[in-house]
Length: 306
Image (cartoon, rainbow, N blue to C red):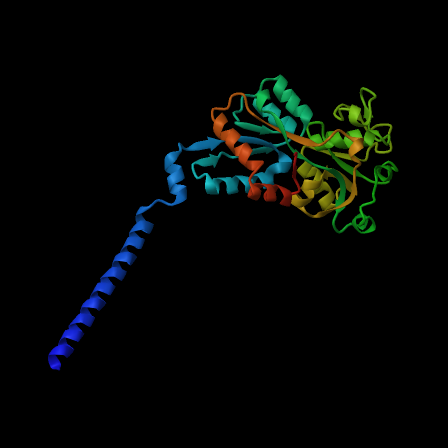
């Protein structure tokens, strides 16, 4: 009886040891796999050469583009972005004219992109319309106008009464050009060519002799225009709808009719001197198709051109 008991105990111990070694082996194999196998980002990085992209983008894209670049880098760890230049579209062209290097140009104006094509700054074959936007009239969020026109029914005709001070982008700022085109339809901006609305360039003209004479605050960026309304330095300002998301501190009190100005689009193109054209195009393709990127653009008030 004792002999049988000893055999049974020995067998049980043997089985326990086998099970323990089996568990140890599985655990050890799992740990080894976790330790030795590179993570997806590691593998991707090892399979690609490091790339640094330089983007030139319209000032109004700054926060949205920063967020999208961060998303892109998460799954494309071999790609880094040099300090992206956010300036007015006219200033971006000036930088390129002075010899600055960029892989991608995203303008807030077809006209400014036309200039870039004409001067040879970009590869015309890669040009496409990336975003569209709306022109809105804003007031400081705590202002009386923000309360009075909470239903956003403030109009160009209200501006034309001459009762309000106005902030507008200067000739280098596309949002200012669009604003001037719209203002010309109500006699508040006189185009040098005599044209109005969509036919006007909105760049060369005057407010003198109009209800806005002496009441226009010109700024060198749409961001500064927005800040003028935010601070109460002016009663109203003309900005893009996306700027309301970007800066805050203002409320939309009116939407400018789309037929009062040229269509607001943001063209993009690869720069003619880009040394990373393939990688730059891959980024643009991803930025206009990836679900997470699309969601980010929308969160910042930008709508992709279909």
